Image (cartoon, rainbow, N blue to C red; front, side):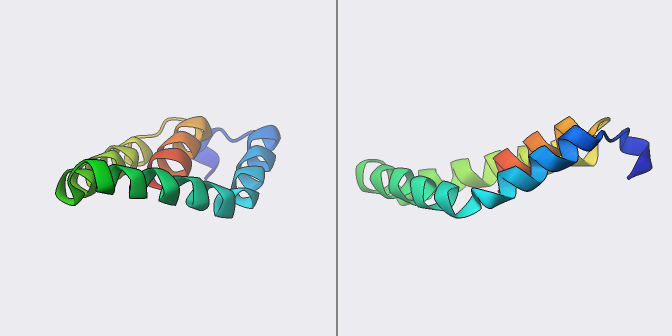
Length: 77
């Protein structure tokens, strides 16, 4: 992880993001349920898969820890 030029502030921020993980899942479940009811479940699934794929690609080529937090924490998680 030293090649990511990590900062102590960012490590604390990434830990605080994981604290709110359950709240994010609840909000996401409500939005996903609404979209499945009003759009197609197939479209919602494909869109979610594409967003998660983009997040993993961002993580694979992340030059700094900020990109890992955004890619994995927000888009994949």
